[in-house]
Length: 339
Image (cartoon, rainbow, N blue to C red):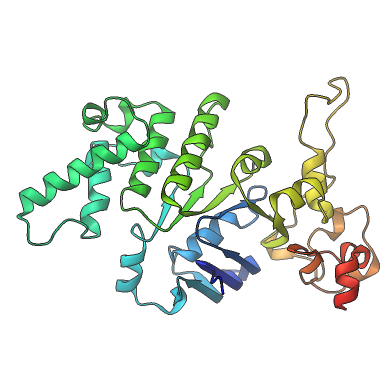
């Protein structure tokens, strides 16, 4: 039986505030297999980054995490801090948003990549400290070369401010990949980059993913970015996954009205420039004032009375394609036979 590399079940994250507990993530479930790319999409504030930080247990102490997160058979929510240190950066790596703020401005980029090697004791422990640092530096330069930074040995001695935005992003990828992880979490890896550099970074990520056979959780608000890389796609809204399935299913046969609205708002070559783009009316509800039923119900054009009564479950609308929508479940032959 094919066991998932990462399995998240009913993940809920709440933050303790002066006004009480606020849910940032609600009942999120998904699986990720070795060598697979899952795109996690949704607008800002939908809970994508909180979900990724919960996997690595990097959330602040105010966060309360419930549910299950299993990685390669290990329960990460019950693992000790020492065990988590052996996982972070070694078996699971993360590319954080905004490389200019994620990189240390007063350290050479080569030292920052080498530090990731030394932190996980991947250099032989019997070597002298000097030899270990030299080996870590060699591997850092090699990692920079792997992400296609020209003259890597020289650029490794540069500081972040001496590099372009695209090169800083490549340094972040090198830092994440230097220990050859099994899972890479890429949080908005193309944010603030121009279209040409975006394409280069996406191509690089695709090449690294195929070369090393690693799994990737690609987080983005850009549907075009996700469509180029992901095998499967999960769409988040107001802290929960509202649709998940193969990329072809989600993009070509979207079941949830929110996903349809997002796709209809994307401009295409055939789009009439004289007419305004389609938009989704209304705004995302505040997490402190979520409705009792479907969070998208107040903005939905096909809502029914059932949508407002209770938080809907994910229902399989076709094999491998799930949506959190009572209307979609009624229209689905798979859902009707399952019921």
